[in-house]
Image (cartoon, rainbow, N blue to C red; front, side, top):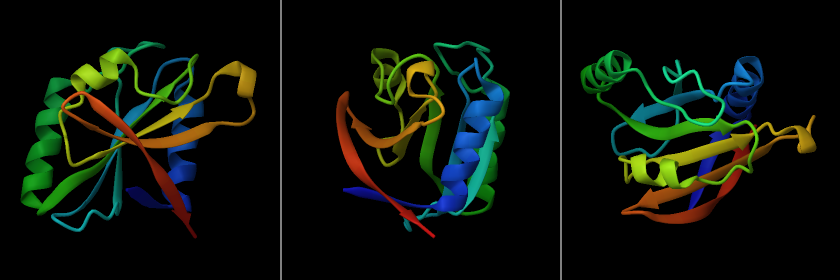
Length: 138
């Protein structure tokens, strides 16, 4: 399994993670239903405003699902940052992973690796985490 993602999206996620530091950033990348291709990025607000947890605002999430339905899209990527830990799903991330078809992208902006970042992708299905290869195009 792998995620093919554009350099533009990778750079945008990393920029958002740095801009929103020390809070975790979050968002989604959408694509046409059944394509598995990430084509439209939608940064979201971390309504938890936390350095250790992210949460989509329920109103924003409802609006997102309506928008996805209207445009015949699906959530291809769900991303967020970890500010002080490695880019690997936490127990909380695993517990809240509700989109079995999505790629869960995590980036880490922890200080000991600055100015570098980690950019990793996982599938999370029924509590089972599988890391996948990330292919950056462009």
